[in-house]
Length: 233
Image (cartoon, rainbow, N blue to C red; front, top):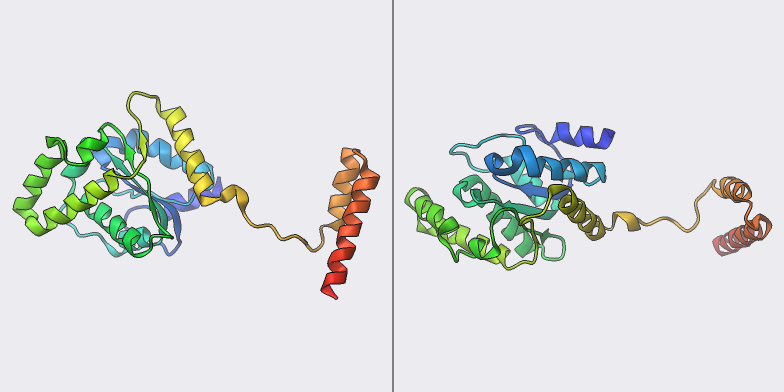
C-alpha cells in the first residue's frame, strides 16, 4: 500500500514531517515495539489511518524534539499503550503530559484512548507500586514539580474508558481497536457531493450492466439531473 509506505518513511525517527496524523501512538519500545505496537501500527496503515509511529529505539536524556512535539499537536487521537514499564520512561511520560495539555486546550478536536496492555487501570491510577516506584525515582532526577505533572497526566488518562488487552490474542483485539478508530474518524462517512460532474454516462452504464429495472433507474437518475440543472439556473 503506497500510503502506508510513504507514512512509514516520513515518520522514521529524526525525519521531519509536516503532515497531520489521525493517530499518535505512545509506547515504551522495549515492552511492545516489536510485537503488539508494530502489529497495531501496520493494521492501521492497511486501514488508511494516518498514524505516527516513532522509530527511534531510545531517547536518553532528551527533551521531546520539534518533530515529535508537532506530531502530537497535529494528531487527532492519542493512544498511549500502558505497559508495565511505561512509567519508567521519562520520554513516555513527557509525551503523555503533552497529550493531556493538547486535549485540555482543544477538547473538541482531540481524544485520548488508552490501551492497558499488561497492566490494570488501577496501576495507572497509582493505586499500586508498579507506576509509583518509577515516579519516585524520577523525582530524584527531575524534581517534585515534574513528578506531580506526570502523576496528574497518568491519573487523568486512567479515568478514560479505553481497551484492556488482558489475556486475549492480538489479532482480534487489534481488529476491534482499528474498527473503533475508523468509526471515530468517520472514514467510512466521508462527504460525497450530491452532483458529480461527468458521472452521468458512467452511472447509466453501471445500471445497465446490473440489468435490474435499468430503465426505471436511469429515468430516475435523469430526473434527478434535470432537477440539479434547474436549481443551478
